[in-house]
Image (cartoon, rainbow, N blue to C red; front, side, top):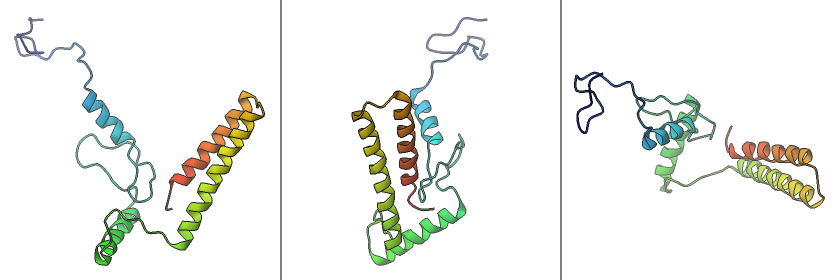
Length: 140
């Protein structure tokens, strides 16, 4: 293999080097952000995003449509773009989900105070996490 030219990663003969290049932290962050993307409307995980092209913003066409309807309604009503409106039923559902999260957290705190075993605490923490994940989804 020919020696590399100064300031270059390629050998002098122009061939690509097979040596491993250091990872690019910016590219790594982009990959993680694309992998962790969620639907802008319902909050569901979008799964793996393409590395090229426009990123998906919605999990389904119905979510894209609901977001469009929401934007146009907000604009015609003169409300700020980042305002969030809930029906009375959605508000009650959210309050119920938050109550469930609080109860699950109180169960964990009570178990710790009572000296619960690691297995019991693990089960309670798993329940808390499942309840919190359910509460994250604002709309179905």
